[in-house]
Image 1 (cartoon, rainbow, N blue to C red):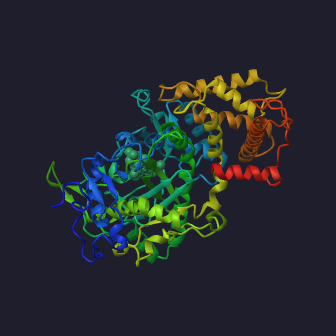
Image 2 (image 1 turned 90 degrees about the horizontal axis):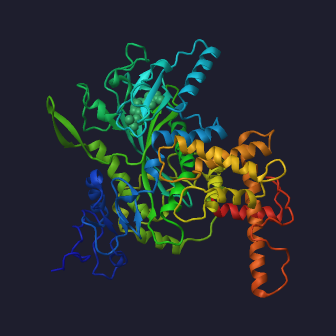
Image 3 (image 1 turned 90 degrees about the vertical axis):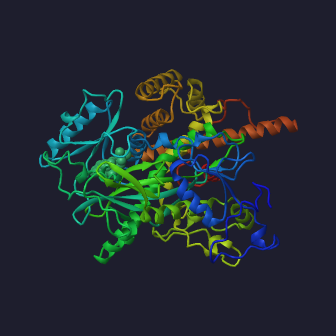
Length: 617
Ligand code: ADP
């Protein structure tokens, strides 16, 4: 008998149709079993177990004395202390997708690229932006007296529709209550959603953020559609409070007497998204366009989240220190408008992976029963995420990889039929060949060329991270900010170092007074981004904001590359004891001023700059 814990003892029975196991000599048999720590999987445990059985991987339900290949956390990155392998959560993701943080991150992008980011409803953060909310609504009403808006108020950090209410006028906000202790986002309510069977519904799509550096995003081909249980009417004072008409949350609608459980994927109150698309396409809707808009929404949203995620990442897993690599399945909640435009409602860092639902046996008495719709979609998402993260396949792929045309050079039409990992299909060598084709499709870097121009804040974040100095921090101190200004040669007769200090103090104080996290002092990334935009606007007055920012980033990156080169020359000069070509100063202050290279003028120096940039993105 095999000792417990040995790989052979842990082998699950061979699924029907799976290739036979060899006696340890065949290629497939020699491949070690991937180990997955499921001890912190919480409510995703059932779906994870099924996925592991299908893959014939090894589950470690109580953890393992030796490190595992993959750690599956139900809640957050910090569920376990891990120093190796891969973990299914990014540090900081939960904070990043909270309603207020997400709204702020998207708003920064809306300031830069208003057209590209019009998939997120206009939002205000309460209580701090209440006066702004009142003033802007008044102004918009004056400009367009026919505009009769509705707003939705959502408490920050809330979920499952908790504490959400609709209002017709800013004065209806329940300010007297606990807004100070429980801040919220107030958002324009989308009054004309697409209806099916007269019901409002939303889409839960699963997105895999496979890696931050380089950015890799996959989208699941199928998702879930969650239906309201009362026929929809546009909001009026009379129906504003009717949650079963306006809110699509499963957790709310399950309690309506009208909720329909169905074992079929295309009927009932929860259906597959593919069944909706099928129905729409039979009515002549161009579903390729719907998909391409959804893909674009997902990529743009992740582009908005990435800068701050990178700050969290370097703080929790500093370069050079042992740590796991991360990936994460995100739940995107999307509403299709009547004109089929997808709108982002929210992003969930811990989308429910439960594959059972509650059924009310008698009034107030609930029982958990299997949900075939959930199982079909969620098991595929977990299993195919694991397949993509397979550490042995990765190694094999790394060994096989040939230099090829970068994905960003190919401009393709966005479609849900994006590329999958080629190795997946190599059925002669791959024991996974008996599994269904992967449900996750790569969308980034596949479509990188169409979206890279949006990644400006990510480059600002790279500057921020460079000047953070102390490993493990997420805040920039005043000295770090001064060094940034000095090294990038941003101060001049119009912008003295005293002005730099005032800018730092003003912006940092304001951001820290509205932040919920008072643990760390110093300048957070958003404050740095604001300061950076401010500097860009001062320097390049006549340009649109995104060009001002892009030009200043180019300028800063150029200065830093030049500085690094000079430092390198200096250090070589010292080691080789040769006279240095330039007068070396540690802060780079006394160099001959380099000309700021225009954006499209590729001199030798800008090519170096391009190399530098491609390394950083
Ligand atoms: P929660 O995290 O509490 O579920 P959501 O932001 O997902 O909060 O909102 C709950 C529900 O309210 C959504 O599923 C959707 O049906 C509805 N909803 C949210 N925002 C809007 C909006 N701007 N316009 C129309 N409906 C919305």
